[in-house]
Amino acid sequence: MKEVLKEARKGLGNTSPNPMVGALIVKDGKILARGYHRRAGAPHAEADALSKLGGRSEGAALYVNLEPCNHYGRTPPCTEAILAAGIARVVIAMKDPNPDVKGGGCAYLRAKGLDITEGVLEKEARQLNEVFIKYSKTKRPFVTLKSAITLDGWCATSSGHSKWVTNERSRAYVHRLRAFSDAVLVGVGTVIADDPQLTVRAVKGRNPLRIVVDTSLRTPYDARVVRDISDSGTLIAVGPGVKAERLIKMTGRGVEVIRCPEADGRIDLAALLERLGEMSVTSLLVEGGAEIAGAFLRGRLVDKLVVFLAAKLLAGGDGLPMAGGPGALSMDRCLRVADVRVKNMGGDIMITGYPAYAGIAGEDK
Image (cartoon, rainbow, N blue to C red; front, side, top):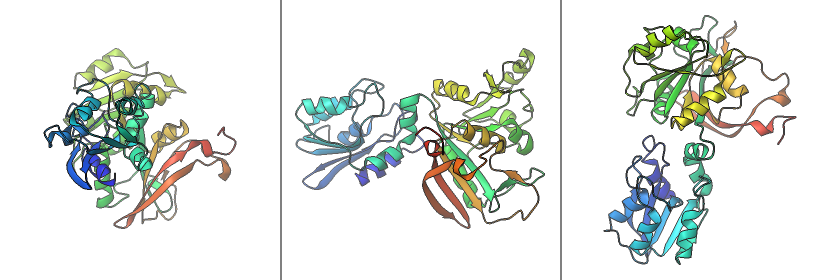
C-alpha cells in the first residue's frame, strides 16, 4: 500500500476535483502493473493499471488507496473493469468519503465473490486526500492558511514592510502550495500594500484562481492581479453595496466580480466559501495578512495551518501580528493545533498542523 500511495502522489496538483488514486496489480508476490489517476476525465488508477495487462489479470490482487467506483461518471465504473479482468482480491486503504456512494464499490465486489480487505494504511490515505474528503462531505473547499512570522511573532514591521520575512526555499515552497491549490486568497489590504502577483513562478505548476476579498471594491485597476494575465483568472468578492458602474469597470478588465453578503460590515467568509464550492473550488490557500488570517481563524474556517518561522527578530517596536482582531483572553481559551509537524527549511522552520476547534476550553466537544 505504501507503493500505491507513491503512485497516487504522482497526480498531486492535477486531479481536482477528483482524488489522487494509485493502484498496483500483484500476483505471486510480484507487482505486475502500476497505475495512477493523472487528471480529471482521464482513466482511473485501476483502469490505468489494468490497461498495461491488456485488461486481464486472472487470480491477481488489486491494491488501491480508494474504494473502486461503482457508478458512471466521466469514465465507466472501475468495479466492472475489475470483474472483467478476473481479479480475485481487492485491498483498499479507505472507502469513498462521498456519502452518496460510500461502501458501494466494496459491497458490489464482495457480492460478486471477490475477497475484499479494507483499512490498510487508512490514516495515510486520508491525509493524502484530505482536500477531496472535505469537499465530498461539505461541498466547501479545504482551507489552508499560510503565514510567515519572525521569532518574536511578527509578519511585518510597523510600517507594513514584509519583503521578505522568509528565505528563498520557504518562498519556493509557497509557490508549490499555490500550484497544488485550486485558488489563492488575499484581502484588498494585501493587494494595496504589496501588489502581489499570486501566480506560480518559482516551481513548475498551474496557476490558481486569484481571489481578492474586497468589500468596497478598492482594488486598483493597475494592480497585478488585475492587469497581469493568468490562465486561471482573478475573482473579486465584493459587498452588496458596491455601485454597478464600479463593477462594470472592473469586469471590463477581464476580472470576475461576485457580490457576497456581509457580516459586521465585512464579506461573510463562510458564504464566500459556499460560493467557491459551487464553482468546484475544492482547495483554497489563504495568503492574506493579519486581518484575513484572524477572520478565517475566528470563523473556524481554517482546516490546515502552514506557518513559516524565520530566524529573525524585530527586537522591539510594534509589528503586525500573524492574526489580527480580538483573540483569547486566557491561555486555556487558545486555539490548539493538532498533528503538528516541523521541518527545517534551510534556516527557516515550517510548522504544519490542524486547528483543534473542539479542544478550546468551555466549548462543546
